[in-house]
Image (cartoon, rainbow, N blue to C red; front, top):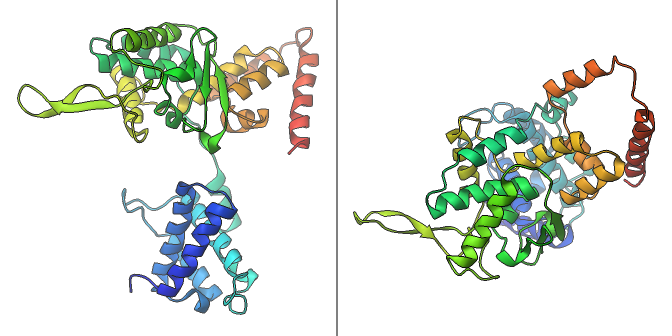
Length: 363
């Protein structure tokens, strides 16, 4: 069997529940659907009404040896945790549905769990490579700018460093979303692909270097040389045509947005590797900006403003998700702690802790 009609009907209802009732996006719904389908395969597409906790236990064991179809490697503990969490949520919902209440118990869902040991391993974090301001400036200086596509690529790196926008927003921004006079980017969720459709107004970060100049020159070129208007894309897709040898090739700018950010990620990797550095992705720039905040911000209010400018609703997101101290910086800080504190440091520390406590109290 490739599917079970009865299962497909209830899965369709669950997808509607995830989208309409819980407000999940298509990507999250697809992850849940894939996890359920993986479980169905393990039971030979047996009806959910006939599922038993022993099947959940057997499925969990099989996950230990399951392999990623694309890489062929054993799936990570984090992936296994994601799959089991999706299945546990599904069976908890299923236990409330007519026709399933008398067949599935809430306790059956509890068998879709990793062991505590494996759960800790799944949630363990490892140092994330983050570009330094010097490395980013090096890429901006060394990136070629002879063709319009090369200038576009360099401007994307500069703009991401200047604003910290996510790659999904980067490829959907229009020229009118950027106010150079006020150093502002208006990420309108009705037109820009922001995370969780947030309305974001981002002021240029004071990163120094050549980033702002490159962005200003790029926007001026689009308006002056290409006659771009306010409704045209800030970073247009690549136009494909035939070259002198009648072969398909990149021939310039298309007056359209990219459909996805995949091309942007490849461009970033190529530019960094071309400068002899690790192939950093666009999201790593947000971590770099968080690291810069730790050195730049003078008080809790500064850090709160920096955090909001990154699009975070609370400073704890910046602290916990983006504010990991590098090992080198960690060593530098520990060494300075052997010295007597400077005047005023204790008061600043207390203000920071008060801000953190308020965030925790507000959830």
